[in-house]
Length: 147
Image: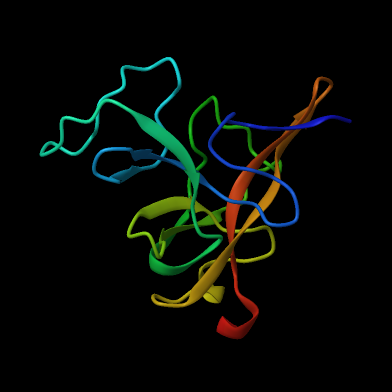
């Protein structure tokens, strides 16, 4: 079965996955998610008139800035991993680059495994699968030393 990212161009896969951001070549302002290649190219920093961005990988680890659990099933196009729906944890993670990125917590972990300030690492897991293949997404996993 073929595995492809659920959102192309937002993260890499492999042994050391990374989120991908756009960085303004004039002022180095970072944005996530990255600016699509076919989008208008202007810097998202209102103090900059730059018009070019480059794609850069972000750190694979960060610290929990906040977290919560999703007690209710999100609406379509969300595809529940289980039937019936089981709640899952979400973490807002502050990366060393200064961005805070929201994502689900890795399978097997929940709010009881998280605390503000704890280190987490980026992992890639299956979001859903059907006859056309498997779609993957980034998630946050508590780092070994944080547990």
